[in-house]
Image (cartoon, rainbow, N blue to C red; front, side):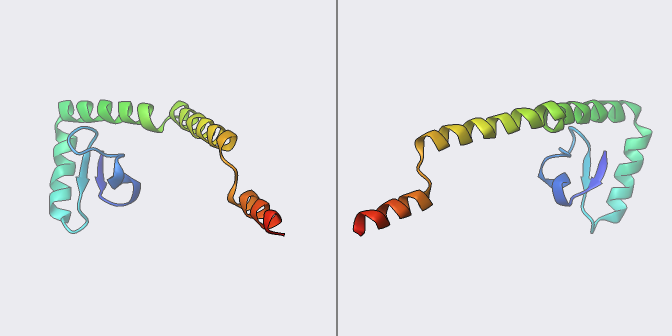
Length: 98
């Protein structure tokens, strides 16, 4: 993948040399050369394509999303069991003053 270094692409989706190439918007000529290199080098295209597929399967798949949701849900449940919300503490403190 050859992509412009913006948004979610620049925070991990494309890993230069592993899953593709990132092109700076200000460097259009270099981006064009990278694109053509990618198209002309079949082995490079296969390597980067496989790296991209593995990256997406590991970090961006439905299974990865569900695992992340379950982790957040578990953390929330543990915190909820231990923590008293601040609004409840505020009401309890107000009642003890009265």
